[in-house]
Image (cartoon, rainbow, N blue to C red):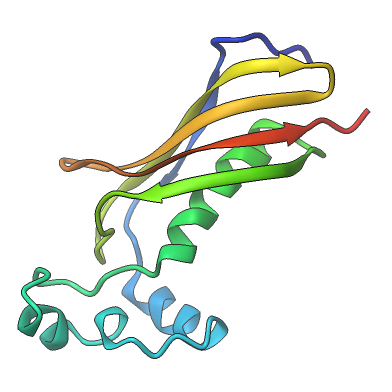
Amino acid sequence: MSYAVGDALPSFAIPSVSPEAMKDWAVFLADPNPIHLDVEVVKAKGLGDKVINQGPINVAYMMNMLMAAFPGATIEAMDSRFLDNVYAGDKVIASGSIVAIDGARIDCEFSLDAEGRGTVNSGTATIRLAY
């Protein structure tokens, strides 16, 4: 497969972020924070009216997009910045583009966007292609 600077990466969409998945992830991550589990806590904190997705899940969405775009490759480095929350029921789309190529290393910029609200996470990654 050939890649070029400026190429858009295929997007990775989650049609509706699942509050049930948040409960499972709370166990996997050992993260009992009630903002992921109890909408009344979210309301009491003034953070909205839906439970809030765990940050590592949002990062995983972007990692899934990168790995699908570069089959067999390795994420060598990744940095992301949380800009807003992702809520239960949100449709989110991870997308990105290639910004540099150096042999088997490809640098990308990416974002996670929540439909109707814009970018909720953004970052960069270096992908090492498997040859």
